[in-house]
Image 1 (spheres, rainbow, N blue to C red):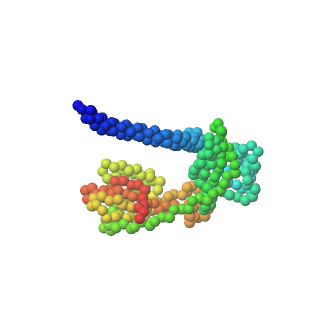
Image 2 (image 1 turned 30 degrees about the vertical axis):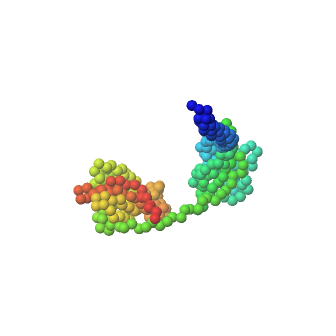
Image 3 (image 1 turned 90 degrees about the horizontal axis):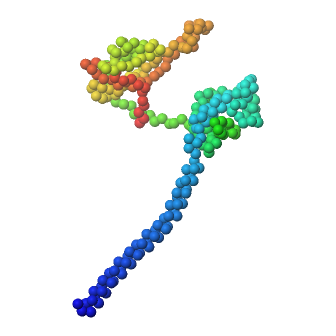
Length: 305
């Protein structure tokens, strides 16, 4: 092999090795730079995550259920006052208030308010010891909310500041559903059977009920607590020949509480007459041997259009 041949080979091979080495070197530099830039961001984001978690207490750190019960009891006293018996309210408020607080906690001692239907609505936990509990209530024909700040320490609660009355959310707008295509012939066929079923459903007689219930199905009735005043509506949509989901609206006759008491107003006293309560049901009907039977009865649902 001549010297010129060795020179040619050495030059070409040398350049290839040099470029390969440079490519590897640049790749290493890029990896180092990227990792160097990414590391601070990762440490920064991890630091933020730890801080956020520590700043938001969990239910296990603050007893939400007990706080809700405490606020409900407080609201039942706070939202009911009567100037003719102010001292009773003060005595009932005492177990909820911090030492030195005004015994009426802001009420001026005049007027009257009655509230009920008090329920836990929500809570905002601000730390291991502080929270604001919101309860809902009804007074007369109005609904409202009461925001109750509470302090917790070692199993004990106290109302930590004046509560705040808030308006309840407005009722939802209800879309009107489209009327179903009704099967008038099947409605006429089913009406006597369903009317008989509801009479038996009210009495609770298992033998009588079984005349209207599908084979292998057991349905328990009311044991005479109600009686059927009337089957008001029956809606049978078009569908399969041997099974339907139908809606029945019935009126239950309900004996008045304390109806054994003697009325001084005569037989026409509305307070001692049986009450009528309209109720809606969905019945799953099944045809067996040419006759319709009830497969299932449940409260009616509403399809929204």
